[in-house]
Length: 165
Ligand code: ADP
Image (cartoon, rainbow, N blue to C red):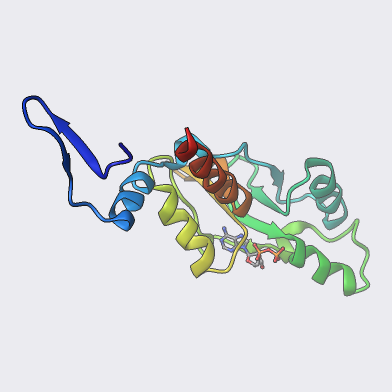
């Protein structure tokens, strides 16, 4: 009954007393990163700015996670980072992404059991488009997914569709 009404044997239906926003936040608190994350798109730190741009087009994403040789997260590179390098009139084949990316420890991350609403809040708070989903390891973070503004838009639409059923 959408949460407004509940039923008990011998009592019948009764009003739960919950307001609409309480019900919405109850639903949101049950949405977790693990159920919504997209596959990660990663490159190595020595990848050139040129190849990073090509990867962005081929993978159709706006942000790439940059990994150290061992596979741990070392940075994030976005469209504007690459544009900045490109207007610098340098040889894009020779500049590694590690020069233009944002580096650890300044990377905002999330984990599989985080509520999606908290990650959406981080996207807004830090004014970024993408947050890597990570798993802590001995020597850093392994990247196992990503949450982007598109992920949040998709989850929002899904909520609207579920309500109609
Ligand atoms: P765009 O540059 O395409 O507008 P963003 O708004 O996501 O994309 O990026 C803005 C800046 O934030 C860039 O310098 C980028 O390197 C950095 N950035 C991107 N993702 C993250 C993240 N998860 N944590 C910290 N910084 C990030």
